[in-house]
Image 1 (cartoon, one colour):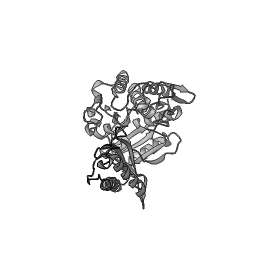
Image 2: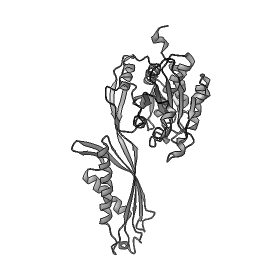
Image 3: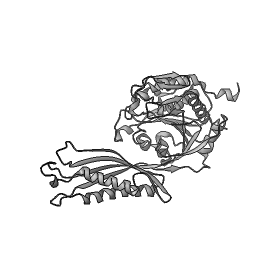
Image 4: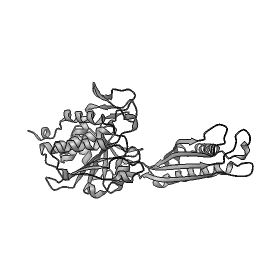
Amino acid sequence: MTSKDRYEPDTRRATDLVMRLMAIPGKSGEEAEVASFIERQLREAGAPASALQRDAVHRRTPVGGNTGNLAFRLSGTRRAPRRMLSAHMDTVPTCLGCRPVLRGKQIQSADASTGLGADDRAGVAVVLNSAIEILTRRLPHPPLTFCWFVQEEVGLHGSRRVKKSMLGKPRLAFNWDGGSPYKLTIGATGSYRLAIEVEGLAAHAGVAPASGVSAIAIASLAIADLEHGGWHGQIRKGKRLGTSNIGTIHGGETTNVIADRVVMRAEARSHDPAFRKRIVREIEAAFVRAVRQVRSVSGARGRVRLEKQLDYESFRLPENDLCIQVAEQAVRSLGQEPELAIANGGIDANWTNRHGIPTVSLGCGQVAPHTVREALDVERFREACRIALRLATGTES
């Protein structure tokens, strides 16, 4: 048996695993059934119960939830830096009720009204299949950690709150999420999440409209101010780039009452931490200006409260980082050329890098994630499985 044959994964099993995983409901905060499935598969493959651990991060997240992160650790058969392979278990709500079916070279949802959940059950399957290969075939490997995070889709809460000690202090990490298996994401933007509440003054809209202060009018003026000033949507100020979005807005109950309360959810993103904070300040200033513009006949004004939270910090690995070099070698071992990429969205690697674990993210062949058109390219998924096994066994070169 040649070395090449020895480290070829069982792609049929991997495909079966991903089909079964995508059929399990598990939106953010409800990943317990997915975690139990992973544990059963590992135990059947020979994993000792003592090597499996779930934490309780769900008790400390805004979402709550029914389970925490799941980790499986293996001692190495040879001395080498510990490596980690990871993915996230949760899917977006549109994937609930998915019935995956194989159609030609793609896996799709049988129900056209649901998403597939390949983001990120494909990543879960890639990491799980690699662990099963090592257990059942007793492949030589460096010290390894396999980790499946919770609540990635709603703010990266699992990777944010995971304890490094649970992971065994890996020196190199590889995270599987969306896109091409040959794309290496080596950096990503950072984001603030904002909660904005505008308080006005209620009055009868027909009898005494001048006695009220419209929270809707204040919010509208602030948003228009941001749009006019170039601080909403795509933001470009000289060489500094970022984005912002007022994503939700709720206020008012009936047309004959001046609305006295509006609640909004917003975000601000930039790879530049200082400019990201500037965007947040501009959003806050726009609402303060708007409050000053709207008064009742008696001179009463509304007020605004803004709460901000760092969702995730930006990162960018240097291109000579060992983690990138190893991932590039794994891709090239399949005769492909790696593509280095910077993401404008958050991924679990934002937080693992923040925890001091150099992490590169790779894709699994997902197409149109977060939509009902989502599909999984089977051959690219299988390529991701090949890359993962090389990285897990240290046979990428």
